[in-house]
Length: 302
Image 1: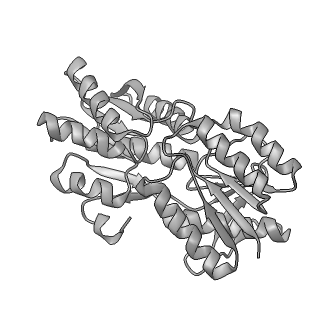
Image 2 (image 1 turned 45 degrees about the vertical axis):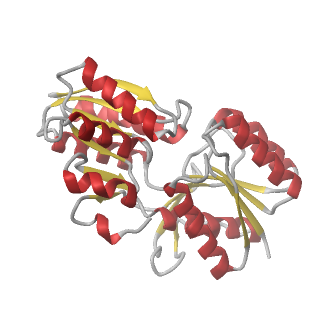
């Protein structure tokens, strides 16, 4: 029975706990041992220590959602040199020896959907700021790059004013969003770029009594963003089935452990019957983004 280990950016937040639940369920079905451990904060050095521990344990497959892809790359090389199959999930380390990246959705799909939702919430015109999380997070930075380019090309009456970084800290995101609104009274929108800053920026708008004046969208998990969707402090949340991402990560790990090649289209299970694989980038794509609103958020529980 292969051992598949996953080191998230941090553990204890709903997003990665949902990935963990999906991974556990997949190992029960597919026949593997699932190990899950991350740092208590989104800290690259602490994450590296956990990766080293799994290398010493000689796991069969190691997946990481790296806080700092560049500093993680040598550790992935070390794991590969030890005979461990290595992959990334949720967040890539493209300049590494990883054998597969399990991606939640395409970079363009997430960045463009976030932008479309933000512009729609602002009524087609306005000025918005982005409250991101880790400054070195590959996935967040790639989405922001798409948001900048897509906003400039498709929405001439919309401007991104600033990008700030709150770490994976909801309270810090709320404070930063509050500071942004106070320093720029013309601000009409805020994007929370990760699952801690999405409810964080909505909380700031709620606290300031600016519902209906400053719109927010973000990448919030259903349970964390639902209260804000219900009172209008958040307009929508762009996400994906996080438990399914955990499941797909384990399925990919089993293919690596068994020496199987990925097909262009992969039948994983009844819910993931057409998972696409890009051989050039070695990327498995979960599917298109999901837009959560007050109407459908109750259908999900994590």
